[in-house]
Length: 304
Image (cartoon, rainbow, N blue to C red; front, top):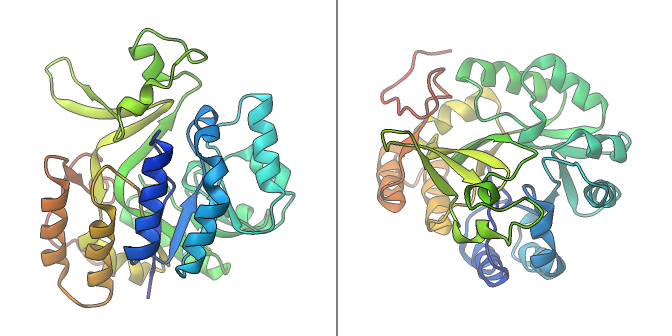
């Protein structure tokens, strides 16, 4: 049985919102593992890092495994120090999202996050040689590549994770798009990203929604939804299914996936529930089927 995981919050939610969110996850969400930590912008970390010990304790008392994730991008001295401090931890587990973390970890056990681009068997084998015990595959891999990569990772004894819900993390930049969009600099952003708890919408010149901006990060406009594909994904050897926190009822999202994993309802019924929960947010699976990521492909795919 695959494990259901909750990825780290990517957005600048307030301290109270985070505390309430994780309290409800601890009490109500049927997830096995929870990733914590600031992944996108180091300037946000002081707002919530003081709550980490209490959050970890509450989640662990609720039976969840906790993993702390590193920044995806390291550019400043304080970011290097924060990454080195995280890499020095022995408990809880850590997930590394940048090469600076790999360097600081010095081949001791760790998880590899989605920002380190485990695209193929050779890369995964190299990561295992650096101490990786678990790898999260990039969300843009097509199903054929997921199949090959997952089998290669499992043959090396690694856990294998794939994002099955939430906006796709497409890119990070040295510049802060949020600040620039509001006529501010990165150093004087005044945390304008807090106004967009599900990312800032971007549209084409014709007014069609196309992407979301989250500080330095570019995300997909639609939510990735691989709920109808989780049986196939599990058969490939993917051991962990990642849900990314969005501004929807994540407890109910988790239950939709859990009910299918437990055989309590069909994927079609659960996916209908998911569509209703997500409202106007589009659901997509294009990357998985080897086409444009924003597309939604319906119907059974040919056997691999």
